[in-house]
Amino acid sequence: MNIIITGGAGFIGSHVVRRFVNNYPQYHIINLDKLTYAGNLANLSDIEDQVNYEFVKGDITDAAFINELFERVKPDAVIHLAAESHVDRSISNPLDFVLTNVVGTVNLLNAARKYWEGDSSKRFYHVSTDEVYGALGESGMFTEETKYDPHSPYSASKASSDHFVRAYHDTYGLNTVISNCSNNYGSHHFPEKLIPLAIHNIKNNKPVPVYGKGENVRDWLWVEDHARAIDVIFHQAKAGDTYNIGGHNEWKNIDLIRLLCNIMDRKLGRPAGESAKLITFVKDRAGHDLRYAIDSTKLQKDLGWVPSLQFEEGLEKTVDWYLANEEWLNNVTSGAYQEYYNKQYS
Ligand code: NAD
Ligand code: TYD
Image 1 (cartoon, helix red, strand yellow):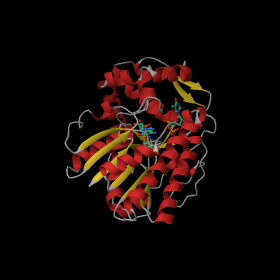
Image 2: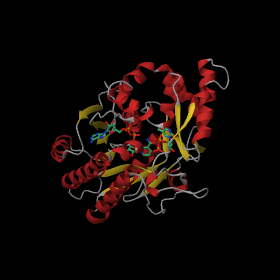
Image 3: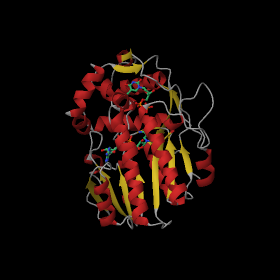
Image 4: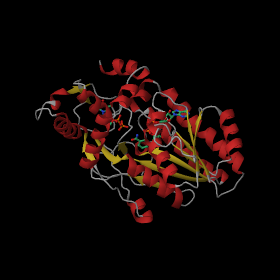
């Protein structure tokens, strides 16, 4: 089987590519990635020489390029993760999100439709987010039946791409699958997102920006558990189906940051309470969704997937990875990122 995985040089994509390359030597994995600021081939240095792995640099907004790629590699499946993924960037530059997340997805769907010619054995797997469901109040959880209600330009673009994927299933009979996952954490996470940004700043004795009062709640899942869920769903879901993926692991941002500060104090040999002094409450994000929580009962019941790691253990592992991979962190926080970082946080 030839599988194109888009966005494989990014955070989650690199974990998915690694899993598929290592676990399925019989598959040929083509990692298609534009290498934006968020894409980094160093994320895959451990598997880049494997015979069943190939990297292709390219942009999913370029329909001609996508068609040529399909023509050449004759994929049996696409697992689509390439996206602009950061909510704050979507607020300052929504059009980039429309282009990559919506137009890019439709380009891939068009190529799949054209080259697969109704062959329902070929699968298009779209990786999406729980943010399409909008925000929860103090109680309740998102299920697969929850109505879409996106608020940020990022979630609006992902919701739109989900709708296009379903439309191609319903209209053209394309064998599609969608999963909507909660917030991921783990190694190789770009340090503009809350957890890696906080680790980076605590390590460098810089302020840790907490938006608003830190009361917003996110449901955190270890990235390797997400990659395993994608593997299971890719192989077992029915055509046209949707699965929610989540860790049943809700944390208020401020509680999470305090936990992280305690771990960092211990790891860096600082006096207890030292890192927490860096916590700085800053202006809230515009349209900041209060709470996300995923009900993943369907995935657990239908396909037997359960998260493998407790959050505290996962967070320790994540901190250890960042402390052991200083060069990776220095590389990704230089250049274009540094400019953005200075604008946002200085
Ligand atoms: P990321 O920003 O770390 O990586 C995105 C990757 O896509 C990068 O390698 C980038 O170079 C590539 N890319 C961007 N634009 C492209 C284009 N036009 N053409 C080709 N490649 C392009 O993102 P991530 O956090 O790994 O998220 C991956 C997917 O999972 C996204 O679709 C995101 O919506 C979804 N998701 C993320 C989370 C999360 O917590 N991070 C949760 C649920 C779902
Ligand atoms: P983020 O990691 O950007 O993920 P998402 O917005 O997709 O959930 O943010 C996670 C939460 O942390 C979110 O409620 C916004 C908040 N946040 C901060 O308080 N400070 C920060 O510097 C960042 C990046 C996020």
